Image (tube, rainbow over all chains, first blue to last red; front, side, top):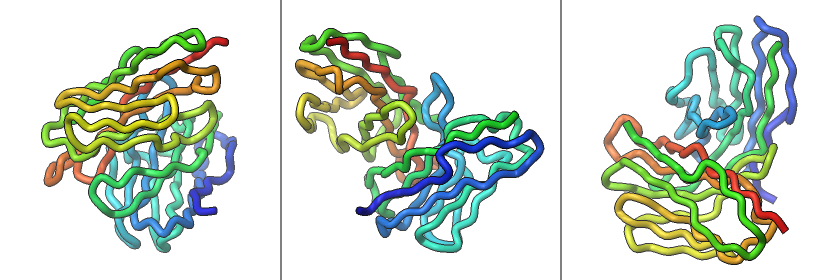
Length: 113
Length: 114
């Protein structure tokens, strides 16, 4: 079955450490996205990529980095510069076409102490 | 700045009690409005896309409608398994700085009691 796989489901890190969240899709989608979800807030866009080897900052990119070396993969690194990294992180993908809906993975819950 | 506002923040219904959720948006020249369902600890699940005012989409007990300023998600005779957070989102208008980006509302938490 096609879908988006995020791993791990839960991640715990000490403050000051960088951490990388994995996102893999087998939907053959060109576009991929990273969102952050905090209680009581809408999903906020961190980074998105329309094609391989290209990506753009979203609304809250500070303290995060991404790469897009393969069509299927879009890992997100949460760096020590991110001031409030504890959150639920969601990866999504879509066709690179106007009005194409996003399909989401089941998220990674990151806790930094 | 593109904005999406959902109301109410939370809604409690008895099983069988029909109601509606609201999603207001600010982008002119809407390119697409989406409804998603999200269960606790899971990613959002796509429900509907609406493209133009007057359009309606249905799926089981859910019907989504769209006007020029807002969208409604109508829930008819809900069951406890309809309990979830419902999110709406819009694409930014073409050519703007938000092109290709989806803006989400904060969601409505629906609880249906048996």
